[in-house]
Image (cartoon, rainbow over all chains, first blue to last red; front, side, top):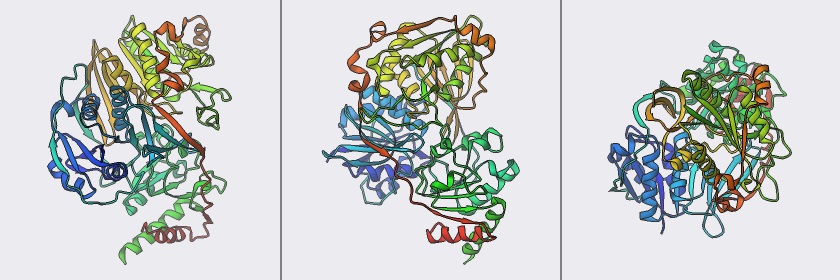
Amino acid sequence: MPEVLVLAEHERGEVKKVTAELITLARRFGEASVVWTGAGADEGRARLAEFGAARVYVADDPAVTDFVVAPVAALLAQLIAEKTPSLVLIAGTGQGKEIAGRLAVKADSGVLTDAVDLVPGASGEPVAEQSVFGGSTVVHSRVKRGTPIVAVRPNAVSAVAEAGSAELVPVSLDGESASAARITERVVAERGERPELTEASIVVSGGRGTGSAEGFGIIEQLADALGAAVGASRAVTDAGWYPHQFQVGQTGKTVSPQLYMAIGISGAIQHRAGMQTSKTIIAVNKDPEAPIFELADFGVVGDLFKVLPQLMEEIGKRKDL
Amino acid sequence: MNIVVCMKQVPDTASERQLKAADSTLDRASLDGVVNELDEYAVEEALRIAEANPGSAVTVLSMGPEKAGESIRKELARGADKAVHLQDDVLAGSDALGTSYALAKVLEQIGFDLVICGSESTDARMGVMAAMLAERLGVAQVSLASKVDISGTSLTVRRVSDDGYHTVEASLPAVISVVEKINEPRYPSFKGIMAAKKKPVTTMSLADAGIDASLVGLAGAGTEVADFEKTPPRQAGTIVKDEGDGGSKAAEYLASRKFI
């Protein structure tokens, strides 16, 4: 069975959810070989085995992790040459897409980004589904040159457990990256106990309807009641009511959670571009004509400051049961 | 300092964008083209760096059909000094591999100390170009910058990550990409618009740039579209009017779907 390389994402030894999703996808095409950069592979191994990783190539070397993107792409190119995998899967995050791009140049291979699904085509080749132009068009694409490199959007599939041996195999990067950019400091933004926006299973986003920075606080309250991440529309981040890094939409983050709640968001195409592939969508808006209702599986036409407190009270009651 | 900004003309994000049945490429001809919004931040950042480093020149580099010339003029009006327009019918349908190859060939020819890109284009949304250009040009990649400081040939950048940011250091020459909100792009002034008419725009063909035609365009792409369709409309949902019970009804829905 051919190998499929999966680049692991991890934070302080903890394997990110998207990596379990990628291993699940990899098993559709062959044997999942995880590529782990940096420390923590011993801690992460059990989690990788749980989802069916056959082996884990570990490159725990500052030469790989202390520089921006280039060495990781070089490591993957080296593994493509040595192991001739049938496919390389990378998380479709900002950095993941850059790694995919550099790797594509190094390996002279086609690259696809933002896949929301990946299935075998007529001759077993990976065919990626992508949602483009603000979610208005669904495209199926494939790679026709080299080793397919696909950056997959977090939450594209549900991770399914299957026992694997996750054998640790140390690897080292050959050669030097002469003109790389060095990472001298890593700062993790305060987000409390909330999950990361692009990884979260539930996202609660607030828009212009929240009226002010203070008004936006109710979005955080609902998010916390649901264990969700907080998102914001561009109107909110432009007005400075909430930090820009939480913006969902055309020029912000793209999310694909199990549940997306759009609160006081009208749903212009630029916003829809960032959330249209969410599995379930709930909207609350006082304007019955708001385009967001065209997407909503469930919608409430009403004042969010009346609807949300009642909703949170009901959530609280059910938690107490 | 010799600063080159890569700019792409894209269809307005508010317009109805479609793929053409014949070759599955974006129908650009029937839509108004605008400057990719994220590239406006790249041009503004270039102008600010140039202002802080006297003797600098800002060149706009764009690959695209003839009508991309309108967008090039707009960035000259905003303040860029000159432009290079890579224009050749063979380039149509290029994927990221082909585009990065073609742009790198031009950049090698015109020379640069610093290349600045927007973080992604609003049509393809791949977010790979700065990384691919750095790889092809063999220079440092300092991308997804929300803050750029340059002192001599040293570059310090705040690079946004999924969970916060990284501080990154590199030396020129380099390729950087900037994220939205790194700055507030200035508007072209009337004087700028008048001056833009006289600023030099060099048009280059494949031959001018030494580009191998077999590596660009639809035929040279490393990827292909198998098929596409309009997204099927989502099944009409249940919309209720809040009669004092909207929150309860939303909770019932969430419970029915096991979210609470």
